[in-house]
Image (cartoon, rainbow, N blue to C red; front, side, top):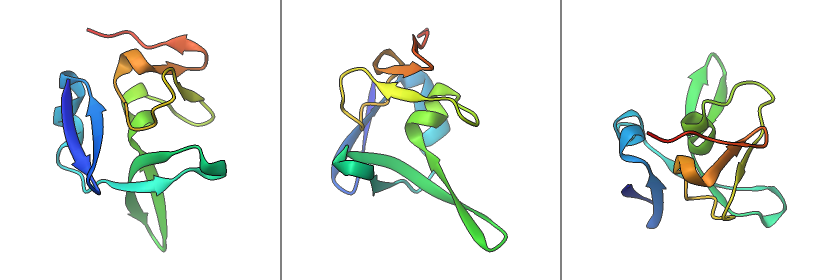
Length: 92
């Protein structure tokens, strides 16, 4: 497990995912309905900025895939804490 800080808050990822996320400039985004903070970064696409969320990136979510946190900690993005479309993610 690797831990890195975003706005002085610890974010947890698996060792295998750390190399994919370490080079981005992550920030925290307040979730809707006070459901916590989410690690994200922005990608400029023309005049718009698309948000890329860490938990969706780790889970391999696309389109309308739903990703949920098992322990309700939105900054714990380890695969064992994520569920995509109701199924637990496989870890190595």
